[in-house]
Amino acid sequence: MMLIQSTLRRIRLPVSFHTSVVRFGSSVRQGLILQSVSSNVYENLAVEDWIHDHMNLEEKNVLFLWRNSPTVVIGRHQNPWKECNLHLMRGKGIGLARRRSGGGTVYHDLGNVNLTFFTSKKKYDRMENLNLVIRALKELEPLLNVQATQRYDLLLDGEYKISGTASKLGRTVAYHHCTLLCDADSSVLPLVLQSPCTGIQSNATPSVPSPVRNLSQAHSSLTCETVMDAVAKEYSFEYDNKPHIQVVDPTDETIFPGISQKKHDLCTWEWIYGKTPKFDIVTSFQILHEDSVIDVKLTMAIKNGCIESCSIILPYQWLPKEQCDELQNILVGSKFCTSETVLLVSTLIRSSPQDYEIQTKWNILCEKLISVM
Image (cartoon, rainbow, N blue to C red; front, side, top):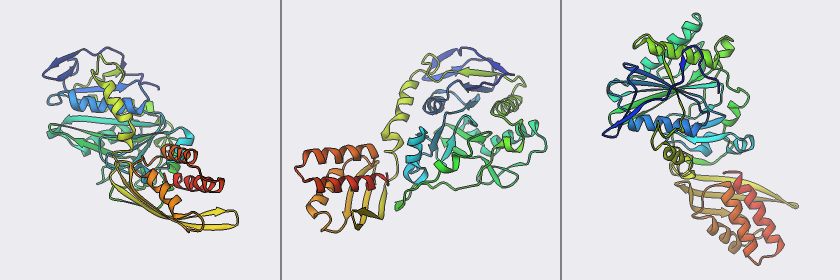
């Protein structure tokens, strides 16, 4: 990951504790700028959690700059099966993360800049933050046509989304984070943010699709480095007119005591998938087997990422009811997860004294089932 060059200072931040509140230095009067050296999404999201939980923001605002390796990041109340193409992501090695804030799903890679504005709750103002970003961009390219919307997005030329917004309001503190598409992989972005799953019935927060464009397409000078530099300078001008960036390592427990646990929590299946609001799968599909076309109806209830109930309806002459019931029963209580379904069906096949034809049909059904996971 490249770091800002013109204003960068690499220093170790002094940390002191007072009634569980951590203070970062005293060299910056009100506005503190931190930049992560990590491109690991879980480490960077853990920094957000740590600042939210531990820093005193009553007299000091914080801007956190960070970038991630290819990852899809969903909002706190979203359904990953409905928001993104999990199969394609697994094949391309693209990660999945669930953040603590609300909002919609976004794609991150090293061509995308993330900005997190931390304040006390009473000073929280998303539009003020977006206007700061606009001023920074116009310092680089005065003729750039960028505007904020009522949804707190940033549009380029009145049409193309270059930034999405999400926020988290705590009891006394708040943060607003937004993306800036500088040079993200535009060939991958629309593919991973389109779910192939059908039949999902959910009250989870849906994303609102929008046409997007990279800032670098508007002008080649708008790289991640120049944009971060400009935003940092504009942010500093709000306070003491002395651009000053502190580079931080999100894995450094001497700076962020307890942060490894925060990262661990964000990496778990229980958080990424298990926090999905309850939803149902109601779908039909066909199985081509030998010379027959078999119609199958699948109904599942998913709670906390696990299969709460399962109904598989298909012709009795193709698979006897008791065999279908056995498959349904083994799935109930398991994670709604490709690897777990494959393991359970494989175990069922090995442990059951069935003939080869029954085992083959279980395998075929399993392949169809994992196509909706």
